[in-house]
Image (cartoon, rainbow, N blue to C red):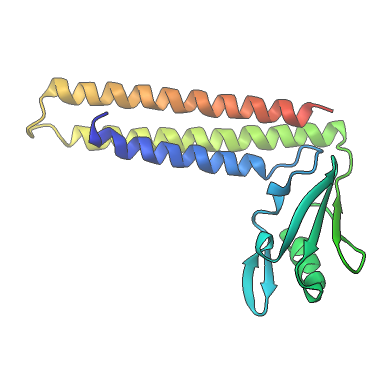
Length: 183
């Protein structure tokens, strides 16, 4: 692959990675520890990722259990989860914190699928913007050492890359939507 294309391929890969992490944070009725990835706990005055202050496990299909390494952190972890607004209230029993996921209603599932599709559309727009930037960059190459045919080839390759990533976005949306709608 031409190094001029590699830059845009990297940007599109980042867009896909961003979409995948966004989709992981959408809960589908089952306990998924990834929804806690963005939760930061105040650990002696320093915002610290939840994973670094306790052990996170999934003992049942719809429950996440957090065992802090220091009992003094229970209240801070509980507060951080409430502030993160993940839609679940933590239960503190004095030694562990539990997050029990309620069964999703049909209406809530449909709303989540809309969210998934919206995030997918945003990713597609980002990929298309990267393509546009690439096309603009290639048009500026006219009159340089690269022939018009060479520029046309770069534009064709960029379009193929764009199509590939748009298909990947569609596939990710389809997989996540199916996961959300599965009862």
